[in-house]
Image (cartoon, rainbow, N blue to C red; front, top):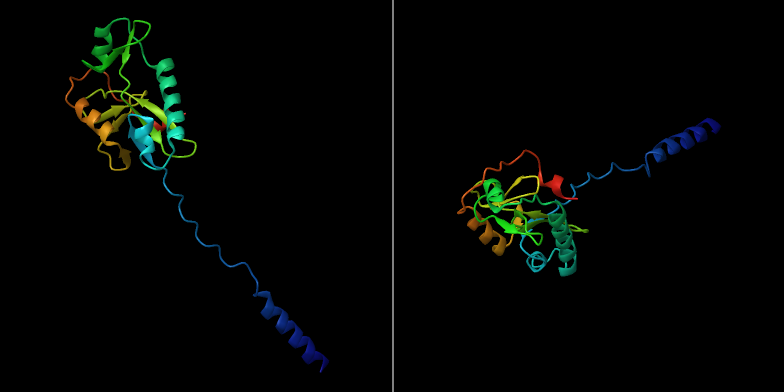
Length: 175
């Protein structure tokens, strides 16, 4: 009888050893893709409903500061236009010329980040980042505001400069 009770206890322990075991972890779902967009203003950006006006404004203010500090500058308009194309340069406060700031590439995340965008080096419907990465305004993976798309279409009509797109990603321009 003693042998039978040991057998019952051991059988019970073995049966219970499977109970309460950690189930296989559920497969992790992929993190939602971070949305990106092209906008001409903080209001334009906030209209997506993804960020507040203040969040968009803060990101765009930083992009403008980056433009002011890092955009290439030229002593003469013709030199700027030789690289960026006719009607694609503006005179800065210091009487020098730089590529026209047209829009902003915005990462619609918290915190939001933005990069200034310039006219493209070729006649594409889009823009280029500070590292000359082309941004196609008809890319379906981007949220492009109507206002930004209008500017992008105008870019396709302007004469091109000699600037060439480089390989890389606009993500490299986002700080």
